View 1 (cartoon, rainbow, N blue to C red):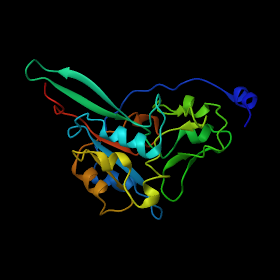
View 2: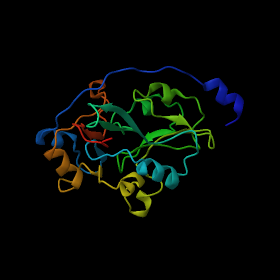
View 3: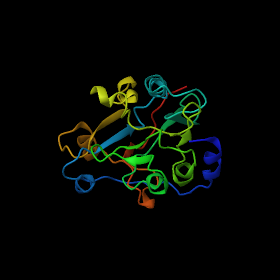
View 4: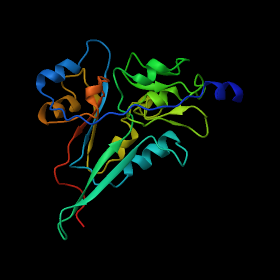
Length: 226
């Protein structure tokens, strides 16, 4: 796609919404399941995360993400408490892998799509014209234009790298504290389904109806003491 066509299609804007807490019961796990296809999801345990950034570093290495942009970031907040008993909280910022994806709905070329076999929301970079409609539509503000490919980019659970080799996503493999759990919501015996049934979790901006598949166990006090 030539430069003039990219410029013609460029747009801007953003959607803003708050964070909603969500306790997942056994019945609601079943509600997330669909017969047939695999439905991949991820769980981030904020109590186990120590903010080491091993996940983000491995993501960049495996998926060849250029400097200046990122598919995955760990956001540190704090310190909380009084010295010497202070601590930090760490949260994951990456694609929420929405079942009902605004980015897919607005894409004029079909570059943004949801893989029917895995449920993973991904991008065909060769179809992307850089219009940035998907960036504007994403309520989580995690998409970016890759400075090398000039196409929209984001986390895709390592669909084109690790998963093709039968491995777990790069972030999951790199995490030293096992703060990340990845698996199939349609498999009742999977590690992630068991973790969701055993723990209260929340999902960001669930009230928007996007049905994100990035679950989180909310931090209580953990993190790194200073």
